[in-house]
Amino acid sequence: MRKFILPLMVTLVLVLVNLVSAQAQDLVYTPKNPAFGGNPYNYSWLQSSAQSQDKLKDPNATSGSGINRDPLEDFKSSLNRQILNELSRKLIANQFGEDGVTPGSYTLGDYQIDVTEGPGGVNIEIVDIGTGNRTTVTIPYY
Image 1 (cartoon, rainbow, N blue to C red):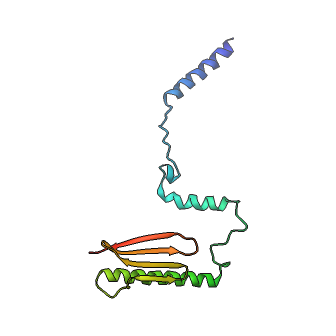
Image 2: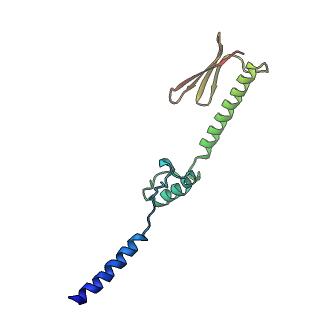
Image 3: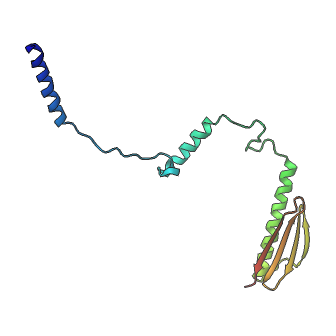
């Protein structure tokens, strides 16, 4: 019995000595995702990781490179944007005293544009002929 008590006592003393020197620290959780308070520089890494793991690609989706785009549709869209840009520049120039657009009705591609003088400024109504959507813009007098 004495053989067991002495090793047991030595083991108990060693355990107690080690308990005194044990140290611990607080655990601090820091999220990785910027949406939950993490470092905002992690966003691009998380986004690229998610995209590389995405196995659910639509086989019928057009690529962003423009390989499957119709050149005539691109030309038509570009021309419409340029005409609308020129019209808006002339309308703004008209309000600030330079040569501008005269009131009237214009048909440009898929758009019907009505320009009228109103009591508060120039009223512009843009109608998309294809969809029937209407947008009204009033440029006030200064």
